[in-house]
Image (cartoon, rainbow, N blue to C red; front, top):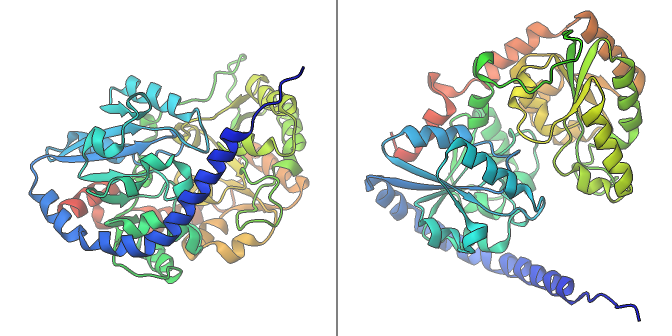
Amino acid sequence: MKKIPTTLPDLFSFVRRGLIYRSHKLLDPILLPLYRRTIPRKVAAMRRTEHIRVAFVVPELGVWKTERLFAAMLKHPRFCPQIMVVPATEVPKSADAVLQYVQKKGYPYIDLRQRRQSISKAADPHIVFYQKPYDYSLPNRYNFRQIPGALFCFATYGFHTVRLSEVQETPLTEACWQVYFENELTMIESEAVQHRHIGNNVVTGLPMGDDLSRPLSSYPNPWKEMNDGKRRKRIIWAPHHSVAVEGKTDIDYSTFLQYADFMLDMARKTSDTVQWAFKPHPLLRANLEKCWKKEQIDNYYHLWATLPNTQLELGSYQGLFMHSDAMIHDCSSFIVEYMFTKNPVLYLVKNDLHRHTLNSFALQAFLLHEHAEESSKIAHFIDDIVAGHDAMKEEREKYYNEQLMPPGDKTACENIIAAILGE
């Protein structure tokens, strides 16, 4: 007799998540204002402490954009930073890559998956940095509500590019002592869509900006060596994850299903002139399962990983960006990030959402992209890259100098450390 699999564990998990969500919705308006009253006392005590314990909660390597701040704190006499390796609810196995990376780098860390402890009990931190501001990105035991004795600081994993209150204003950012911004423009526009102004926004620049502003020689070159030794133009294709959400969300950006076959064909056709890197959003594979079979997904990713002039990139991408010649994408976060390379870039336009959601900081960068609504424009862009044509080079360099450099002739990490210490 065929055994019928039980759904009780899934049902229990579903009900439990719902109860947690509802309890947060009910209790946060009461508890968060009470918590915020304790912040001045916590700040005063922290600044009197000789060695400030800082926990960096890192469930995913690809979106860990405060590593440079972590490294700066390691060298600073006042800080004792540690990495908390925790599971991610969205990418369950991502913590394995985090553990391997921090072990290779020799960073101090605690693998909370092994200890099954809370962050508070394992590290007793004065300050906690999270990667993402959303409750759903971590199991409940690791969210900020479980660490009432700590201060929370937040540097976003992507530049502030959108004017959406659900992105700018979350329970975590409301609990934060300090939330860091690239410049005055992004801070002012963020505050314009926030319902509550609690005075915790600080203009420092972002650590990821520091990470993208180093000399080229400091970035490892992940582009593979070609068999014939010939240097080709290096183009990145970075598709967004929002497939199968047509009209359902404010991040309906993805053009992947429209161009997936075309981009693979272009990679084959340009094998003599272009070297390609397929850099999908970490959530693309999981979302593709809603519309493709697993075999189709595996085969597609495998082709990008194995064709003579292509490669698949799933991890850190700073080196990939800096050693590239151009990029094609439809990701809002990359609109600003790729500007640090000053290279030509093409945006694949699906709809006019960006016109409504981008802030003016990001819209300036968006207008420094080429734009394509059809495959012929993609082909034309590739031809221009191969030929060395770049019509907006000077405008991109001006944007870099005027909008991307942190304030005060210091790095963003230096500014953040000074803000924490009250200097």
